[in-house]
Length: 377
Image (cartoon, rainbow, N blue to C red; front, side):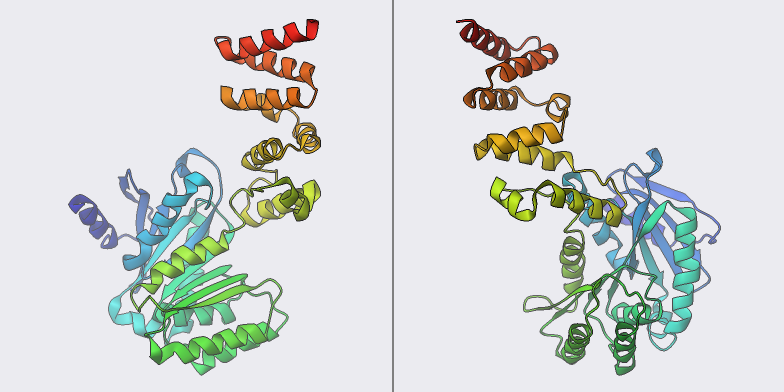
C-alpha cells in the first residue's frame, strides 16, 4: 500500500509538457497511467484500460474533475464490473486544477476553463488516444456547478454527466440550462446528480434544476436527481459514480430473460435484434446478439419445456451449440431434451458430434450406445 501511495503521489506531481506522453509507471493492479501538464493551471492524469496496447479498439472517455481525489473511483468501477460485462472498458482522465485557482476557474472564469477543457484537454485526449464518440464527466462541489456551464454552452461536448454535492447552481446557470433545453439544439443524453439532505444550503437550487428538467423534457435526455438521506458532502461522489454509471450503462450488459413468456412479451427475436443493434451503435460495439443471451434463451426454453422455441433458437443461431465448449452436463441436458420431445435421431447426432470433441467421455458414449440400441430395437 505504501508503494502505491508513493507512485500515485509521484504521478500527481510529475511535470511534463503537453507534447510529451510519458509512461511513468505501470501498476499491475491498476494499468497504464500517464501525467501531462497544461499551461500553469491544470494537469491531467490518464488511465488506459487493460489490453489497450494489445488491440485497436476505441474507448469511451470519462473526465473526472478533482482527479487527485476521485480518479481511482472511476477506475475501480470498471475494474469491478468489466469482467462480467456490466460495464465497458473506458479511459479515465483525471483533471487536476491548482487549488488556489480552482474556485476562480470553476466559477467567475468558467468561460476561460471551458476553453482549456475543450481545446486543450479534450482535443489532446482525442488526438493522442483511441477514443470513440462517448464522453462522460464527473464533477463534485464547484465542478458540479461548472458542469451546468458545459451543459448549456457546449451541449455537444459531453454525453453524460455525474454530479455530486454541487455548489453554485446559480440563477444564471439554471436559466442557461432552461434556454438550451427549450432550444432545438441537441443536448447531452444523461444527467445524474446527487445531494445529501444535510446539505440544506443548496437543496433548493437542486430541486429547481429538477423542475427545469421536468418542465422542459427532451426526448433524448434521461436524468435523475437523488436526494440522499444517508450521504453527506463527502460521500455523495461514491453515489454519483457508482449508481450514476450503473444507470447509464444499464443497457450494456447482455440481456437475460427468465421465462420464454418474458421473451415473447419483450417482442421476440425482432425486438431482440433491434435491442442489440441499438446497443451496438450506442456503445460502439458489436450489433450481434450476445452469446450469453443466446445461451440463456436455449437454456430457458429447456427449463420451460418450450420445444418449439428451442428449435427456433437452434435454427436462428445455427452452429452456436456445436461451436461452444459446453460441459458434459449441458450437453446431456440438450440431448435429453431432444429425446423427451421425440427427436431421438437429433439427440444421437448431437451426442456423436460432441463425442468427437470429447472422445474420452464415457457418459456420452453410453448415451449414444443406449439411444442407438433403442432405435434398432
